[in-house]
Image 1 (cartoon, chains in turn brown, yellow):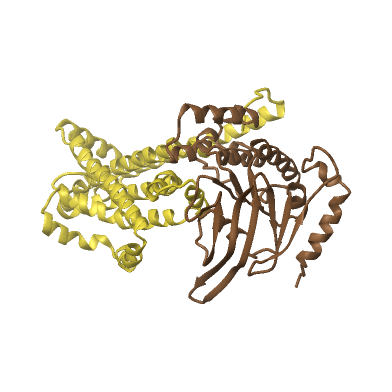
Image 2 (tube, each protein chain N blue to C red):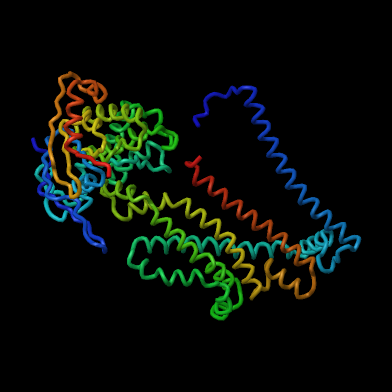
Length: 255
Length: 270
C-alpha cells in the first residue's frame, strides 16, 4: 500500500539577491513500512524535501499526500527527527519525552503507560529523571526517538539523525534505532550523506542529483542474509556492490 | 557526574585538602585586607596623619551609627533606599521582559522600533531626571521611575536578543508537534531565555542602585542617597562615609540574593 506520495515537488528559495531552485520536479512514492534513504551531494536539497513532506515548507509546485490526504501543515501522522537531539536541557528526560503529548493535551494514563513501557524496553527507564546533559550522545538520540514515537506517528522523517555522533556510537545507535523502528512498524524517510549507513538501513536508496535536487536513480537493496540488522549486513557480499553503484551515481568531485 | 564511588585514593585526598586550603587562604586574605584597611584608617586619623574632618574615621562612624540607630532613623533610611531599588529593578525586569515578548511576537513592531530603542539605549537616562521630577513631583515615585528607566531599555534589548537566539530547530521541533505560537513561547523561548533574564536581573540590580541614588540626590528627604548628599552639604563626612559603607553592604546583599536565584532556576546546568 502506498503510504506517502510526493508529486512533482519543486521548491524555490527567494532572497533579495535572487532565487535558488532547491528541488525540481521530484516525485516519490513510499510503501507502508518501507525504510527509504535519500542520499545526495551536500546542500542538494535533501533536508528541504523532508521539510516539505513534514508540512513545514510550502512547495512552490507539487503536492504531498499521506494516505491519500494532502499535507499542508504539520500532521500528527509524521514524526520528525533532527541531526541534533534537541532535548531541552532544562527538562528531565521524562519531561522531554512527554513534550509532544503535553503540547497536544494528550497526557492521559494510556499514553503515559505506553511511554513508560517504551522507556523500559529501550533501556532509558532508570534515566528518566536525569537531565539530558547527564546522558551519552547515543542515549540522548534514543530519548529523542522515543519523544517522536510518543505521538505515535506512522511516518518518521529522519534528518541525518546520526551525524552528530562519533563513528562507533553511530553504528550501535543505527542498530538500536533500526530495531526500534522495525519493532514499531514505522515508515521511514531518512536523509544521510553516509553511503554505508544508507545501504545498511534502507529497503530502497534514492540517489539525488546536485541542486536543484532531482531523482537520479532509485536502488532496491536486497540482502541474501537472514535477520537483517544494520551491523550484520555490512559483511554481506552485496554490500560493496551497492556501495560502488551509489558512489558512481553520486559522481562526487572534490574541486 | 553520577556520584557513585566515595572511596578516594590518598592522592585524591591530598588534592582535595590542597584545594580547600587554597580557598581558606583566599578568604582569610580578603578578610585581612578589610581589617587592615579600617585599622589603618582609624590609626592614621587618630594620630592626625590624615585629617578626620576630610576622610572621617571608623570610630566616629560607629558613634554616628549608634546615634542614628538610637533616634530610630537608621533603618528608615536603609529601608527607603532598598525599597526603591527593589521596586525599580523588579519593575524594570518584568516590564522589560513583557515588552521583549511583545516585540518577539510582532516582528514588524520590533523592526519599526529598533532605531528608537537604540537611541533610547544610548541616551543617559539620568538626563531625564528633572523632567520626571517635574511630572510626578518630589518623592519616591520619581526616584523609582528614574531607577526603572535606567534598567528598562537594557532589559528589553538584551532579553529580546536572547529570544531571537533560540535555536531555530527547537522551534521547528515544536512546530512538528503542531504547537501554537503561544506554546512555542511557553515551552521553548521563555525557558531557554531564563539565563538571559537572570543575567539581565543581575545587571539591573546594579543599574537600579545608580538610579535610586541619583534620584535621591535630586529629590529625596530620606534614604541613603539623601544622607550622602546632605552629609556633604553640612560637612558631616561621618554621615557620608557611613552611608556609603551601608550602601555597599546592601548592594552586595541584594546582588548575592539575585545570584542565588541563578542556582535555583538553573539547577539543570550543574
